[in-house]
Image 1: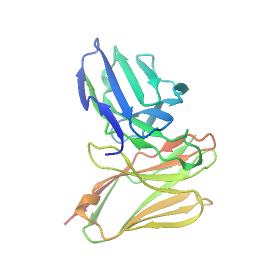
Image 2 (image 1 turned 45 degrees about the vertical axis):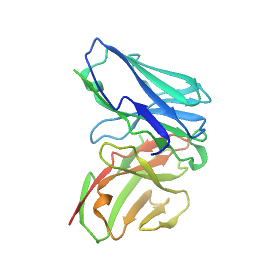
Image 3 (image 1 turned 90 degrees about the vertical axis):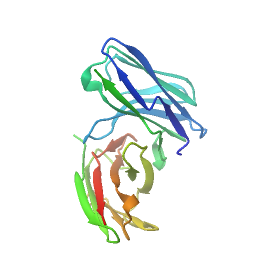
Length: 115
Length: 109
């Protein structure tokens, strides 16, 4: 247990569906991250939030929409996804925003399949 | 561009020693991380190096040479539970983590 939980663990959705991924951290951290992990590819940083404010959006398509209502919760809203969006979506948190070697703690991920 | 290179897959024998290499070309350097990720699980932190040299932590050690853009993770007395992917990541000058694709380590009895 890393102190970061994600739900659901598995999700299968059609291209016209709308769904949301949820992440919760119980570590009292101030920064939270969404990553996409595809097979045999490096982790791709999607979004970064620091003290609930979005600080990074790495050219992510608008069909992915993040929401951070407080420092402990992070959502990723999904709509009209494409089959190439099928991947493992990982949430992470760190005490501060990555500087000085702050370790990121990861959740177990949501395995997303888009049909 | 920024790039992290590590072998895709390695195989080793239980009880042996294995070294997983990572080379990087990044815009600046503020430290290098190693993470372990078992299949279907979260990546978990193993080590952080920001100065040259070897950091030892039990059966695992991590080495860094900033002048060569090179690091390795050394695993001793391998156990079956060490079968996992090992991810190398570098913190660049903007404090962005740049990730390698990971090395899948297979341990055989």
